[in-house]
Length: 101
Image 1 (spheres, rainbow, N blue to C red):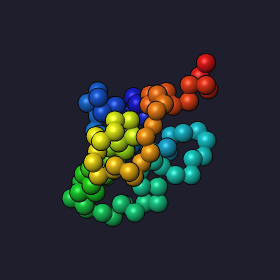
Image 2: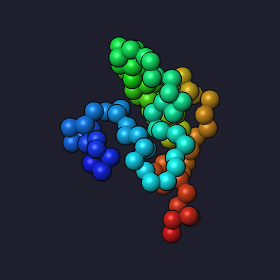
Image 3: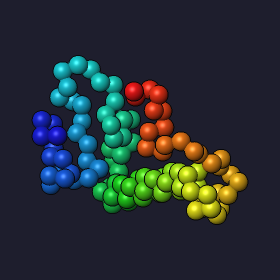
Image 4: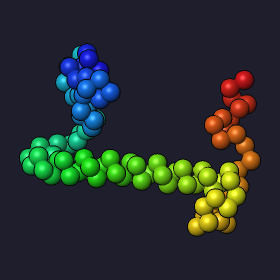
């Protein structure tokens, strides 16, 4: 956020750019991105390539989860998963309604 010196990506900031925890008054053992400092000596091109790969991996994971969700709730919607995942009869957007009454 703004208090960290970095604007949110929807407000003109850069996606994938995380603030460090250096300004936090209590000790935090690791930062969000690259907690062990592996990218410290990496070239900008390698960092850009890895950022693109990470974003694409996240997108692929979202598609995979959505595919399993569709296969469980809409029979036959994902032919590859027929018989692999059981049918789900519950409410997908509220899977545990008894906990929220």
